[in-house]
Image 1 (cartoon, rainbow, N blue to C red):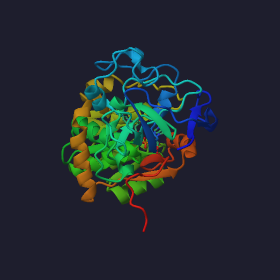
Image 2 (image 1 turned 180 degrees about the vertical axis):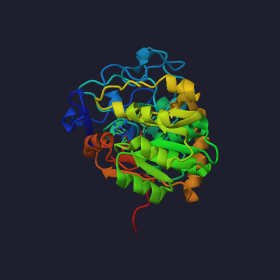
Image 3 (image 1 turned 90 degrees about the vertical axis):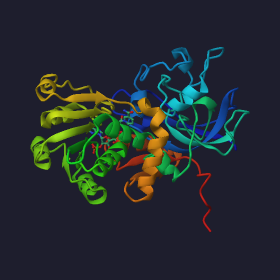
Image 4 (image 1 turned 30 degrees about the vertical axis):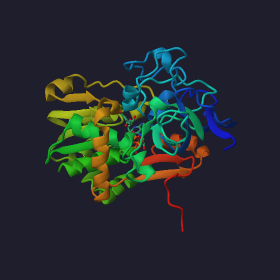
Length: 379
Ligand SMILES: NC(=O)c1ccc[n+]([C@@H]2O[C@H](COP(=O)([O-])OP(=O)(O)OC[C@H]3O[C@@H](n4cnc5c(N)ncnc54)[C@H](OP(=O)(O)O)[C@@H]3O)[C@@H](O)[C@H]2O)c1
């Protein structure tokens, strides 16, 4: 081990994210403090929420039992602070609810899959693969209580995607919040993305008619051809509302929304009475675009008696292992496909995140930062 390549924030974006908001530096490998382990990053997850973390001021500031907001400064318990109950915090990882406020000079934060390379007398053995929030860098000192051991049952790219935050979000937002029934029509926005591709396939597994929304006809044809979507509609078409009506001849029972804004406004009008809307994310307003008000709310909710429910995947943290097992079985049986885009090298992260926010990705986008410790060497 020698240096620690890191991507730090050059300046916070003031509008759409740019590559010069970041810079690559050669840092040093940190010494883990008491209660921390040293992690070597293997895969870095690129997520729309990374862009929210770059907004000034805290995002996702809620308190966990055993931890105060003051503890959240640098991702580690404050000196002399109460620290974390490992059971509570490990369950809540890796989507840490208490976020540090990112400032210029900080390493960009990100979910990662990492290998413990110095256990530092904690209960996490060296060689263990953990999910944590170790950022855009090669090595990080991470509180052991905030590293979630991975029960490796598939490729690590699956564990950071379909069996990680993205797939679990799709699983719980659809199956526990929207609860579609066989024969119902489910529409999902950002349908070709990491969450959307899984939502659509899980809805097909319960016997629903599934319609995807994306900005691209090429993505839409791929959803129909590769993932079994019944139809897919381009939300940028001037005939969007009509196209939804054509694709959903029995109306829409469930809308799984990842984007908000004008797409959500149009979809509320397309809902059947007593329809359910899962509000999973609002990617249309993450990258410097102001929020759009919904002129048809609350009237359309009253008239159609809609149930609109927000969710975060951490609400279901106790159920993650069971969902992970179930989805791994569906993948092994060929019933669930994981579309993945993995780029090589830490330096590809800024461009990858910008492209994700611009709709370039199909499926889960990750960056390989270091070798997979479990890979069998080529003969
Ligand atoms: N609630 C939770 O716990 C939780 C957890 C994880 C993720 N999420 C949310 O789930 C959503 C999807 O995340 P993901 O990781 O799967 O990302 P993703 O869908 O793989 O990637 C982002 C996609 O957003 C779409 N998009 C970008 N700008 C848009 C705009 N102005 N209007 C409409 N669509 C736009 C683009 O596809 P197209 O434009 O082609 O559709 C782009 O490919 C995000 O909102 C994210 O914050 C929520």
